[in-house]
Length: 272
Image 1 (cartoon, rainbow, N blue to C red):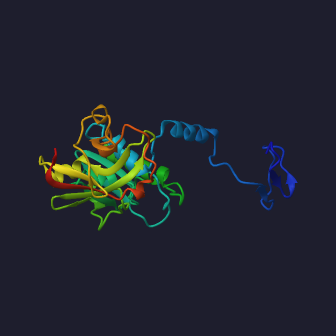
Image 2: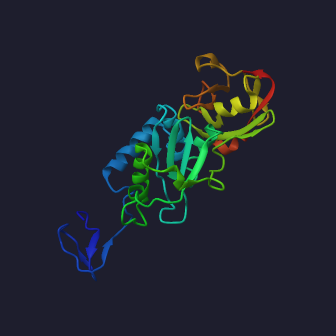
Image 3: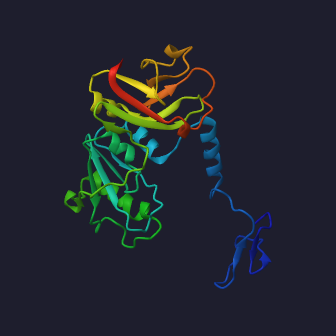
C-alpha cells in the first residue's frame, strides 16, 4: 500500500483502515510477495545459508527418529486439503504418526517395514463443529492428534488402507541380495545423500557384507567418518540421518542427482 500498488475501485488505497464495500474491487498491481510476512524471508535466508534440505518427507523422518517411544507426531503438508484424500495414521516402535495420505510418511514407512498403517474413517466428536475446506490442520488433524496423545481416540475408528500413497524415489528398492537406491540431493559440502537407509541394509543383508556401486563403479569400503576418506574421490558412509552418503573431501560434486544414476548395494565380498 505504501508503494502505491493497491487500488480500491480504481482509486489508490492509502489507508489500511478504509472500509471496502462488497462490490468494490481491490487490486494489488505487480507480482505479490512470496510469503505472507517477513518471517518467511528470514527463514528462507537461514535455510540457504545452512544448506539444509527441508523436503517434508525427508525432514519428518530424520527429525522424529530421535524422539522417545510413545510420542505422537503430527505433520500437515496438505496440497489436497478439502479433497477425498485419506487421513493416515502410522504406528511403529510404540510411536504414532498422523498426516495426510499423500506420501508425507513415505520415509517413515520405509524405515519401519512392519509399521501398521491405518486410515481414519470416523472423526465425529474430535473434529471442530464446522470443518473448513482449506484448514484441516486446525479443524481435523490437531483434534485427532490430541485424541491419539490422550488415549481417547478409539482404534475402532481406523481401518487398514488398501495402499498408502508413497512418493516415488524416496524409498530404496529391496530385492534378493540387492538394494537399489538413488541420489536424493547434494549438500553444500558436496556429499551425495541417497535414499538407502540402514533399515534397508538390515532387512536385505542382515549382518552380512555388501558392496556399494555408483553407475556400475565399485566404491571403496564403508568408512566410519570423513577423515578416513581423505584423498579419496568418493566414498560411502552412514550420515547423521541414517541414510547412506557418498562423500568426497575435495570440491563439491558438479552434477545434478539424476545424472548419477542408480546406487546399488549387492551381497558379495564387500564391506560391512
